[in-house]
Amino acid sequence: MSHTSTFRSVLLGVVTAAIVCIAPAAMAMKLQRQNLTQLIAGAESILSGTVKSVTDGIDDAGVPYTEVTITVHSVAKGKVTEKKDYTFRQFGLLAPRTMPNGHKLLAVSPEGFPRWREGETVVAFMYKPASRTGLQTTAGMGQGKFSLVNGHLINDYDNAGLFDGVEIDGGLLSPAEQNMITNPGTVDAQVFMGLVSRAVSEGWLTTGEMR
Image 1 (cartoon, rainbow, N blue to C red):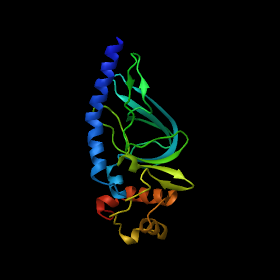
Image 2: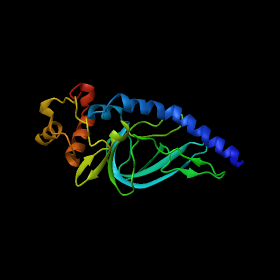
Image 3: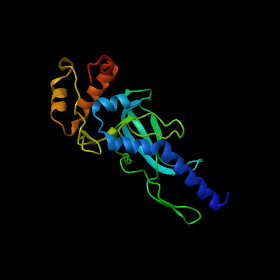
Image 4: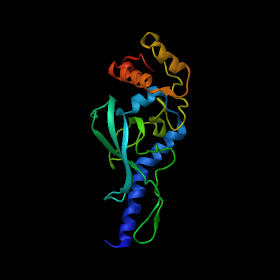
């Protein structure tokens, strides 16, 4: 394949992925914040783990991606396997790159998408993969990826709006959980994951006990 054909293939892949994945996601980010109830509802899987590797590339269809592998510690939702590696591809490159024909491809992950670093411990609310491209990111974009810092979890928006409008039947909450919800900010990792795990396993969203 010629350099020109390669560039055209990459360009077509970028445009296709943008139409399928980026426009709706970017619009969602502008329209609303995602609170905890919405993040749980929107996630196909919820996992905690350590980021093992972060690489990027361009697939056979010309779509630029960032590939993230997480060594899973625990799972609160979904069919992800604990103690195994979970790998997904998110739209966009880590940094611009020069193509063989000298053109520079600027298709980095757009603003609002979560950023991943090797070695960081995270809690990820993973949205389902896109049907056409297989690309995947977190529910709520940067709101659905939490990084562990000194035993506390924080997302790309400093947890702003995380508990806004969240209602949970009072008898279900421990004092620590109640305190976390009523005092927004960074959240204790164990308390947060305990709450999320119980909400999923006990079906609080289905029963209406969490809304």
